[in-house]
Amino acid sequence: MNASEMLRILDGIARDRNIDRSLLIRDLEQAMVSAARKYFNTLDTEEFACKLDPLSGQFQLFRHGVVLEMPPDTFGRIAAQTFKQVMIQKFRDDERSSIFEDFSKRMGEIVTGVAQRYEGGALVVQIDRAEGFMPRSEQIPGEQFAAGDRVRCLILDVRDAGSQVKIVLSRGHPDFIKKLFEVEVPEVAEKIIEIKAMAREAGYRTKIAVASIDSKVDAVGACVGVRGSRIKNIVDELNGEKIDIVRWNESSQILIQNALKPAEVQEISLCFELGRATVVVRDDQLSLAIGKRGQNVRLAARLTGWDVDILTPEEFTKGLETMSQTLLTVEGITEQMADKLAALGMVSVFDIEEVGTEVLKDALEIDDAKAAEIVEICAAKSKEVAIQQQKDKEEKERRMREEQDAARRALEGQVVEAGENAAAAILGGGSPSPAPAHDGDARAADILGGGT
Image (cartoon, rainbow, N blue to C red; front, side, top):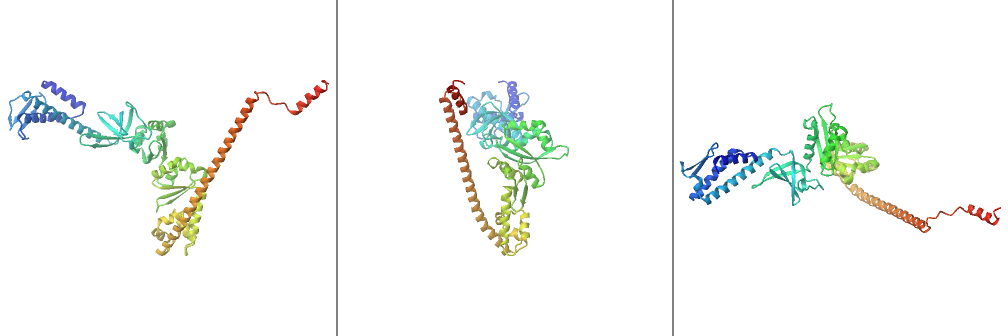
């Protein structure tokens, strides 16, 4: 191979693999030094040096600082093999360093790759000149890709694993949805609309709280788009994952109310000591507020940062009454004190037991002994309430089973009756039903009377 052809190949490698040309020249020089050391069978790393002219492609080999008048092609097969192995290894190291540096700068970006295969549950995706992998934990549950499918994903992490660069991809991470909103909603990319909080269960449902720094821009409306065009593109990319866009509010009560939509909330009581929000909804809104398998309330809790309890008005009132009656059994505790605790978000004997004596001392301005007595009495009452709640739950489940059994038996009876009617119609040959009795009597009279 002549010098000009070697330089042309060198330029092609530098361009295709995004490696600095000077690094490749340095690699060739080091490979030539290794070949010379192999040919002369020396271990001295300082004995040889090499200089490659980047313009002409000519090598200059030095031994102890003196030019070695010996062309490289006279080194022999073994030295040439050494040159080749060192050169390939150096090129691979440079390419790995280039990939690591390139993708490290792109962490957090959305990229589009091509699915290659599955390895142990992880999806291998070809991205530009590198392969990334998507662990099962970062995939959307139930989503499958065939070889050659387009895959849009987030570069979650880039790791230098010695011999290779591991590029971790994700479609299940919450930041994936944030980046999709930046792509589909210009106001988000321009920071006019800010995503304040997000909670996601990949593949099922996501709640995202947004706020606008411009009073003229409606944050929720801009994210939804005209006739839902913007949000539809995101939902389609996520294969139908439901996305609830919530209006952000600095007030925790309003934010929790917004986060629980579409359920209608009647009342919210916040206990800052426990980080708990007790939400009261009507009976017909209970299942809507909780959501399928508790998903709605669970995501609302993660979005708002509060531990959310959903109660019906009856349950809420009963809990308050039980707490009040229990507190009033303690000498020196008044209704005003019980009302003060309720105003602080402690709405059941369970809450009193959980907050402990220090909070009660500060809130009611009582001594240690009185606070300890209150906690002890509420703890005993909470055990009784828990037992009764378990009994009520079992009784409710028993009634539901009985109602379901009764409904099933009724349905089976209807099916049997319908079958009997159908069989009777078939056996009767489809003939019309008999005429009413009075019509038959009239015809008999006509016959007996000779038609008179």
